[in-house]
Length: 429
Image 1 (cartoon, helix red, strand yellow):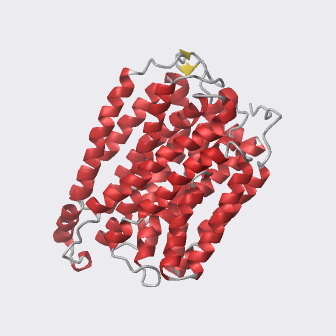
Image 2 (spheres, rainbow, N blue to C red):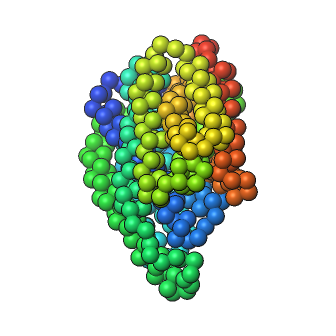
Image 3 (cartoon, rainbow, N blue to C red):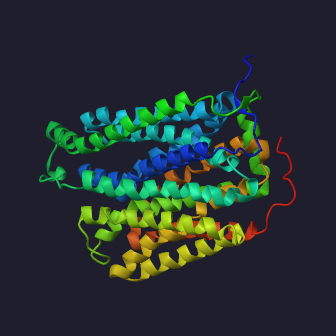
């Protein structure tokens, strides 16, 4: 039996390393930005492959399914080889996923894009399993809520910048041929030609990821390490028996699913005649307003969470989103579109606050908890698919009731977790 060799000796304790905090902020920026590019790729692929809303949401299902499959094994890798080496592995997987867009474009088939997106997301999953607990460890425990929210602001910076650039590159030119009028080799050739711009975008990302991976490898011994035994999957899943953690993990499922569902539909929503009647590129360039609101809100939230109960801040944000969804569904024009875009402001503090509230008291099992939390991110594969099918059946406005139900669950968790955890949770082992 091989002895495991690299779990952090600092598990459960704080590390004073400002330079590593900057590195983790960079990771949040990159994986947030790449994830948000799906919101631009979705309308492009929907038109090229003549897909329904339910069908094109398979983009998000393929992407976020990686969290279900990869998260717990990634936590095991952290236990064996440490945070920095695991980050290196994740960055290599992300690079491979970007490169797979080359054969995906050449094939002219929708399913090959789903494969590329899955591999890319597998790498992002590994990196996120590293980043979430690491930023909590890189400073005092008392300010973990605020610090993780601040780190998520860099995630939102990525989600603001990437869709805007992606809209100009990927949605910047409209095809002069209707793909519905083509068939056979002509259709495959047309799709390969039109998706080539997507390939160039992801090749540029691959180059940046390779440089970052090289930097991480050179710093792979930066953190102190000590051997520990990696937990089994059963041991990790047993954490869900702790009520606070189990409720928090379920809310991560609901939150990511709702956030991704709304972001995925923004372009199509704003193109509706009853909303803002925008052209595809113009609608795509509004997506950064949704994610930019999250960025602004996270900087504000990092301050508010130092003053008020994190649970109550979370409940207030979730209630505000439910109200905005109702306004958007029941109005028209700029009010309807603006209400949907404004949701990003209140989404801002949700993921880091749910994560830190749910993981309170895990101590040395923080990496395991992060693995489970990242499994819950699979909500991004499920909720958008349900919302897409609802949109096909009852229209985009009525389909907003699906994410509204998700936010109702988050509001309940915020009220439940409004008081700090004063008694250590019962061991799940």
